[in-house]
Length: 250
Image (cartoon, rainbow, N blue to C red; front, side, top):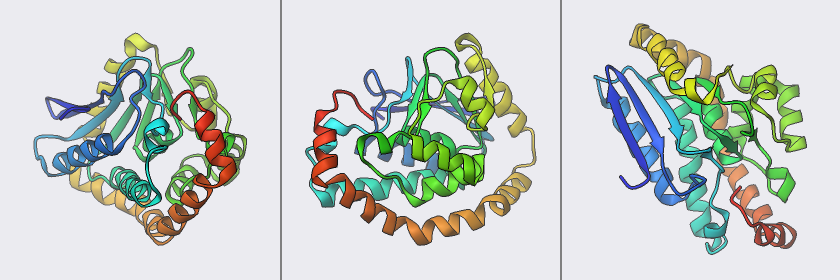
């Protein structure tokens, strides 16, 4: 694969996003991630998964410059695939540990929230659902996952403010589970992944389904409508003007 690599070692699979400086999501990245997670679900040699990025970015989210060239139908197809991916991770039968090696913004934060555990590096790295800052909405599934993770009131604060949180702030909020140095990120992620891998896989899969199944059902019922609303706002005159003025991915 071009943008997503997989390295397996002693029951733990390390999935790495590699696309340019900021690991921005486009059709190819989402397709490769979906195929990788589908393969991992069926691989009996893999007991747990680590998802991470390269450089100073886990991912800066959607590749906005590329999507500015998309017509509504093509962009809607991308969003359907993107939201399907985070639902697949959210319900994946194997534990998924997000090793957030740097900035984790917007769509990338949604992917991180869908995982079972999040470890983040301190320093300049930020995590955010900042869509409101450039006049965009979010998706029903991302809201459901965020509520489950941090609670309804904190979810409101995150989404209404569009704030960029440091690792330490995110830890206090419950948005991430652990903060470690950049040098320790890989070893700590492996440690957590191995702890998950030591648990009975059938029991883990069953309990995860019980914890998340009802939430996933709500996501399925409301996701398509929220995507349509997202697209309507995205292509509105005011939001389109803001997006065209951006110089980085978000």
